[in-house]
Length: 226
Image (tube, rainbow, N blue to C red; front, side, top):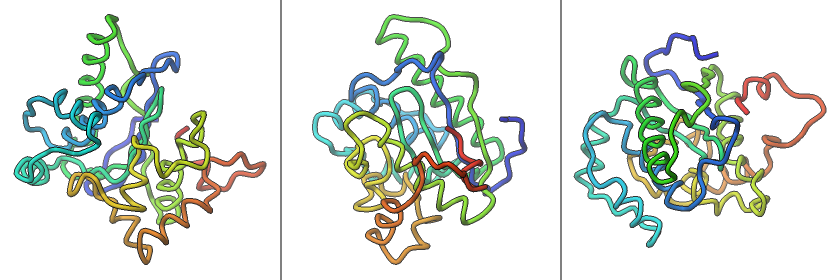
């Protein structure tokens, strides 16, 4: 599935699961560490104290990154992050290829970074994810809109989160339906701009059939990575 030619400025649904679908995010710091990786690694510039920044976010729920750092990342973007959901044993991303080879390099970097962190923290070794990653290109507005709802409704599959997806801290839903916590490091405009405002988008997600078990699947549903 991954053998495709990425197109410059094209949009892609990315998904990967852990080996044997084991849980790889146990505590808030684990989620935060991966989250900061997907934010920072959009640009191939060195970052320091990612662990410290992730810990600060867990303690205070504040993205304590300087405007200068955000601007530096944004200036050197290799990919654009449009939406995300980090689940206990997998993740979903909607990204844009901004420079040739950007998406592949980005996924390699974030997965290697988290695997190194995870193996050190939990005293294990070996591969953490099921191969490089899975990818589907986004070709239509209908697919794009449905995909955004699908990503943001993913947390409903976690025990205790059904109907509370908006409050799930490890997805970009609240950043689209309320206030964007990450500034220029998250760029949901490709689908948000098709709505009159955040409330309109929230209503779209809440009434979407994404993540519902339907007897007859539509063509756009068959393009999803699960």
